[in-house]
Length: 331
Picture 1 (cartoon, rainbow, N blue to C red):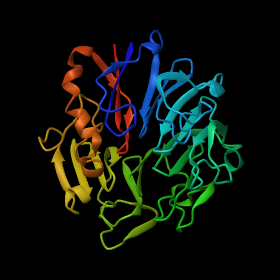
Picture 2: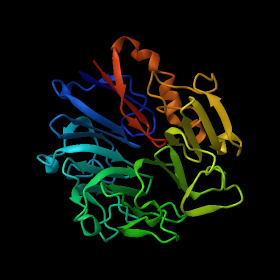
Picture 3: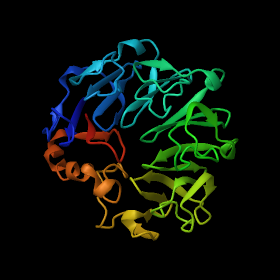
């Protein structure tokens, strides 16, 4: 098993790098990978996390704010057994096997949930409201963070100017608070655009946050929605994803519902094999052309995927609209 990465020309020192095998991870059994804006993190079957990238805000969690071109272990998390990582533009969230959460990086809007607006380059455990909770899922927006527990509780913190925290107001939070509207629901995932969010709940989809580009679907007369609100016409969602100001929902019939800025502020329905969309192998939403700012730097990376055809690719790491790299796991 080997890690192959592609970088786009946004990160100083990483400009348009060719496909590169991370030889420093040779012998590791990689279980997950995620691309941030200028950083990449992977974790192995022993729960150890490795990071590389620009690290301007300490988002790698390696105890310093300087770039690294090689994957290095996050020493402070050794022994914590990490099972999931979510990487935003300037901050990172780590989930442990026993349901605890650690955060690091920028905290300008309180997205680290440490009760302050001070960032950290060493992962710190999220305390307070999460102390007695077993967290099973995490998600990030550019400047906000979400956590959900095994008891059906969902919490959020960080930037809330457009109501993207789903708490019913526009106030930022430096400590996580529960989203009452989602209490008790069986949450599959939360995904975030720049200022809007989606939650997948047993086939239903809930939306909230900014709607200036009609990216929330049903609520074209509202500039923002402050609490999670169900999309009335959708009850069989299989996957959800966000671009900067665009939303995509894949239903059981393999139709892609697209709405928001890039969809001309209307709801378009496309078949999975529609030539106007770009999909990478079987990993449906990675590098989707309708996602992201001005079709996103990811599209340029996707055009270079033919360079990887001989690599015997197995799966791809999680990529957000703000990502400037793609992580490929090869057999």
